[in-house]
Length: 116
Length: 115
Image 1 (cartoon, helix red, strand yellow):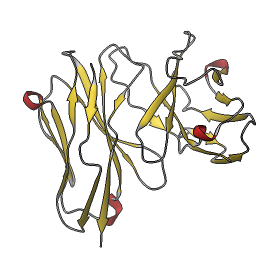
Image 2: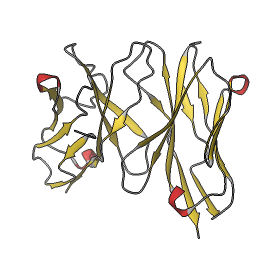
Image 3: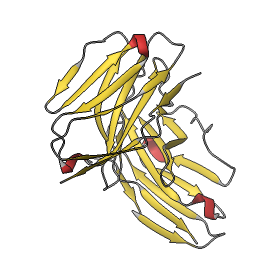
């Protein structure tokens, strides 16, 4: 697609429920990132996918968080047994893979999660 | 350690004023890249500029200009003749060459341009 697409744009859930957030990156972008942005805060790295390599999960805050990327394209971030502190905007970004580290990330509009 | 500091949390100006957003970074690497992104109220971060550590030339794009000074580890962003549409949160970020994984982000500066 023309941009990074995320769904749902807004999700309200009850504490303890599981949620899935979806990211559809730009076609041809091999790198995909998930970030979390809490109110008034900067961007917190969660996970990074690069092609067929094992993902970098070092930013996931707990084992309730997991993500997968199927076929090197669409990614799903799953939060199990949601807690109120999980409330945030979850941002997905994709980029072309460049060995120099000069990747320009293209971001989606985010999925706003509210846990009641 | 790598770190990006945006000391200004919030700035409020009146339309047509010039405004400078500060960014100070720390890194031990000699090859790195610096970025500025804009996050308007709609929420989607928009890429503004990328600069590599070997290019200290200042850059101007319309009303936007960037001043990169390695001597002070700063990469400041100036908006000339600000407009209401410039109201947004602006983020500065750093990544070291060869590390594609983690941009190091500042906490952002919220700019309000009032009519």
